[in-house]
Figure 1 (tube, rainbow, N blue to C red):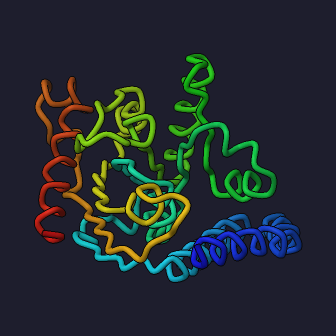
Figure 2 (cartoon, helix red, strand yellow; figure 1 turned 180 degrees about the vertical axis):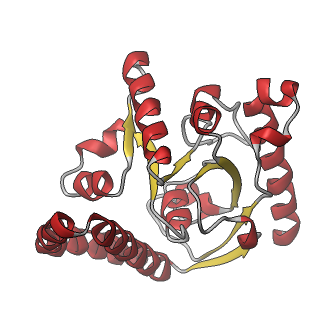
Length: 245
């Protein structure tokens, strides 16, 4: 419980003490928006790395060379834990927005940081609003901001490797022709969810798959893009499991 309490205290203090930082960042953005964006990104990444340290996360990363450093991409990842966001976001080389459930958009201060960093909130029950969210994500990618989405639609608490991927999120790549980067994260649920509320030091594996370029896929693969990427991530997850066994 001590790790959980320390992590919560750190997060709360960061959000509270970060209020004047948000104001300073806003002022910087009036003159140099890029500088504001990058400094905000790096500060949040630092905070996430501190939380991972407090919680005793030992992270092994594979395939880091597959992540482009000079272009916006669409990250596609499986989803087992709230820590998936913390772990993957801490490693984004450039501006990256996440599409998350709309309840996070109601958390004071956290929602300001998330909006500042191009995160979007998705109401799964409102189809019209969901379409608007995807269209905004498409605009962000066109502006040079990467996006990350968990196409299972929710945290996977089953024994299955993956839940069926929802195809709507892949419109981001189809409409922008951006590169898709598959991500497979293994064992993250053992940090917290598997024994809530206790936080346990855990070995987590994050593997980036080979970049997927739509122009290199056949028409059938493009038509069933969600299934194609899902199979790719399933293979990565199976490879991750061999490292833990």
